[in-house]
Length: 105
Image (cartoon, rainbow, N blue to C red):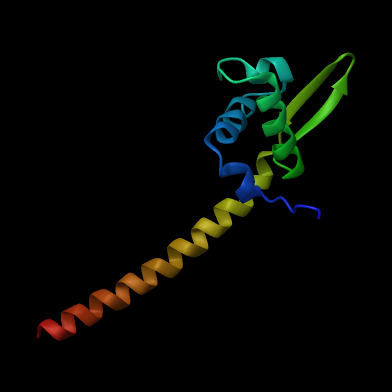
């Protein structure tokens, strides 16, 4: 079975979010990405693979190194979802507020 990956899976893990933040400052090789995490290179490689499959980062070969680069536009999907959810919940809370004011009278 092929697992479908999406941007929400990419940001679901705190380590992956930190990797995205780190790459937002510019491309890094995989060793540089893994610095400061205190986890194995294999664990970093797994996170990089998931982020790449989700389309949030690209990995390209440059000589002997693999260079990772953030594709931040992919996060627009999250921004759009949050905005739509916020609008929906604001409408629901406004209706609830009106209802509560009506039953107080």
